[in-house]
Image 1 (cartoon, helix red, strand yellow):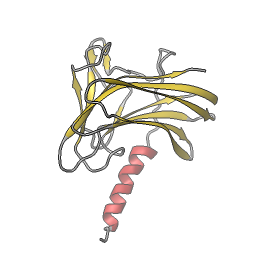
Image 2 (image 1 turned 45 degrees about the vertical axis):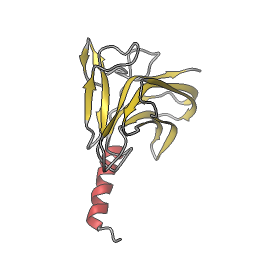
Image 3 (image 1 turned 135 degrees about the horizontal axis):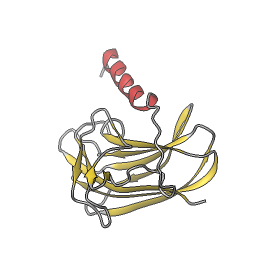
Image 4 (image 1 turned 120 degrees about the horizontal axis):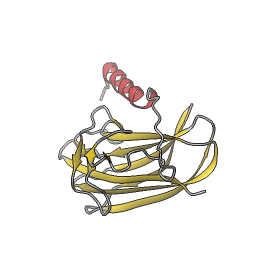
Length: 184
């Protein structure tokens, strides 16, 4: 099978736009949770404030929330063959230089197609996956991971929420109550 240079260029361009050109880094006012808008709402209204939608992301709000989840959660539809690239919602947080333990906690579930939650360390010259969850429950479940991260000035952490991938059938992954805390 021969791949067209035009297709490779287009795919490379979209990946560069998704991962190489995002300079917006958000911080939270609440020091215990580094993620802005962890429950996808403000004053009872649904919002994606602090989050960035991927190029082909089909993100919707739902009133189906986990215990303590407030009024809104998000769903990310799995409609395309490229997981972890286009069908996602992302947020970045600035982190202090040094070695710290972080706890990532996310409430999630899926319908038909599994999704993921990935936490990356973003350095000026590289991106490192620090932890990943495959969402494998059809009822609301809390996914938690503790990671040790050594960072330098200018590094950040990026959380990607992904709806999964399928060319044949549609599905969705639900997310809510996303927290990232420094433990030490």
